Image (tube, rainbow, N blue to C red):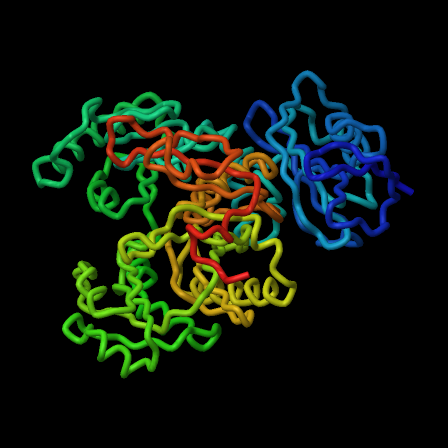
Length: 539
């Protein structure tokens, strides 16, 4: 019987060993390896699983569990020897990355290794109870097997292939955003202003007054084209990603540039529209009663009569971050509504906790990331998003958590049926009685994406930008498991913002300091939501 060492989520070895087949707790992990073997022709040695194993006859790279006392690399060498009867050079092994995966009763930490070998097929002696066939296969052949459902991609599949193909990825936008543009995925960026990310190309080192005229947009378009062309001349396998709708429009006719198309452009309008999203999900998730009104119908007496209450929430049909969400409890509050929406969604105000679920939708799977409680402040009658608390949702009861997850699964599957791929935010509210109501969808990176990304990098060797890229490119995401995030954060326009809270670390978002949108984030390792500054339930 195989004996395994166990580890905690931070890969610290525990004083406990188990034998294969024993049930592991959710906070216990055993070590697993995948070993990719590449030859000088950039082909990979892949194997076909025995018909008596789980996932019979699937093709894959060599892999298995580390035995007690083994290092990850030692386990990889042993598995290659056992399954294929060959030895690989220890000095030619590269650790591609590590990720945690969750399987009920058997969570694991997976290490991905890449070795070089030019062994001939005649030298291979397979372990017949594990392997029934083997072959040297090109990247194109492996992708064909994957598309036919005959190849088990596992984690970091694309990263291994990209190393061989020497692909590079660049972000194109107005500003850097460390939810999107970060050193662990993008090789560089093309932005309006400089930032602290590697490989950054920027249009101006001085703050510009004109950033919206036709003349400016044409000039910026020309800069993007010339810069991308220069990058591509040095590496023809350089690819460029645009997430901002204006940038997508700006770059759509750049025929000679390897720009990866956003598959969601036609879908985003409906998903950004509060009317359309309520109509989309009304049969699968509870929604607070609401009415749609023209601006001329927005008077306090009219609202009281229609909704039979004294306090309301008024939202324009499109918007983000609270820019068009108002708290109304008097006639004078109506004058604060300066949004130019044609229609407004009006609902009764209730005490609540605003909750958010981030998911990543791909052809192959949907990744569900930790729930956050949104930190919402009422500023001049507007509900403004100022941060997120990932600790508070861990205190919710099991019934509430299960309901949130079920609604998120149902909504994600429906949005997937529409054709949307990539990062999606789902907003809910939780009332005093434990009822959950759907609020809106966010088909984009969110303010909380940066903290999710930090934890994905730590525990899953990926980040939100990479997962989004894989999803919109019809590539497998892998089994990335992130069960919780032990932090809260606040967005700060100045270093002194929220100084009434103690024990924090400051993260500069990397923007050009002269850019007026530049701000800091303060990260706390305790829950913030029950403070008076934020929307929350009474104790």
